Length: 458
Image (cartoon, one colour):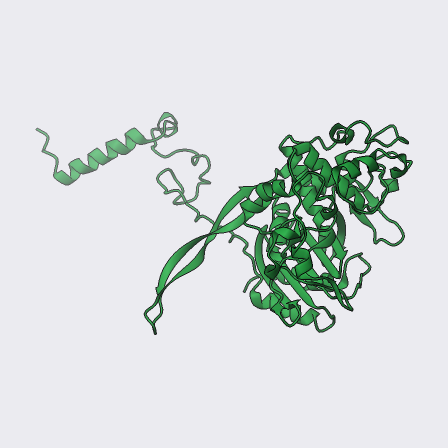
């Protein structure tokens, strides 16, 4: 009679049977009954500890790259202003910056009204020909909204008499946006009937095919026609459209009509030797109420601050999206007085985003149409209103526009790759243009700020 198994022997037998049952078929089907496989399992390499019972090796997740953040400080802007103004004279200078597609810093130097009111980043200034960029944004937005066909002859909106009698093709809104409309650069004027009469006159036109870059001719009068064409196409005042479509969503206070602004927020425009236009004169302008009555304001009358113009630049730099930080309020107590104060702070990495233009529309504005290389101009690529140059201010590419009138010299630029940009507006400076066709004071200030924007945060 077989002796009963001890507990230890029974446990050993059970474990042996379990291991045999779980062994791979290859270990049981070959040889003389050995329980060892002839080959190591695939992928183990036969190394000790890498058999079927080895635990899988789990690699730690790599740390995510930190999101880039704006690096400019208020001190950076103040130092840049002080550094540049050691070499230039002006009545006032104001600047605002865009980093990573969002408004970042701003600063000012000098006077808005001499000996009465200091210049600030929010002071409203007639920005001169940078106004044309605002018209261009309105035109491309109206095309998005189905209000205008940029490639339709302007006679579709003005009547069949508004045509160039010397060409087969006819001027369109797009040709006005590239200064190739074939209209002569006449004196700026306003009034719908007066403008219609000019368009119907043979003497108003050049003998050329509209859209031909070889006949490029910078035209302020062309902007009178373009802006009024937008009004006719949309059946509303252009400034009203601008307010609703762009300025209200981004919280900007600006206008093509100086009379809509308060005299105490508007700068006097100083020339190098006197006054180009007083704040009271500009704020006292009549506010138009009929289509065509604001035409003479369109080429250069847009009145804004550096900060609010930078908000529009941010829209272009950020492919049509306006981005602003999400803020929250905390209540803090003054340790000395016990007074409670609400303090607003930004949530890191959290933004409110408002799309104002499609990415395709911005790309259309930025697409070069031809190169302008004429005597008296630094070479540049003409886009839709915007200009483009490469290798300037240490940037691979910049889109930009200049402005000058009544003592104002202004410059806006942005790099669509880095999504950085700068707006500078000056009054009372000398007309000093560099080899890039940009005002030297504005250029030098921008160059310093672009370099600082690309420094790595400590």
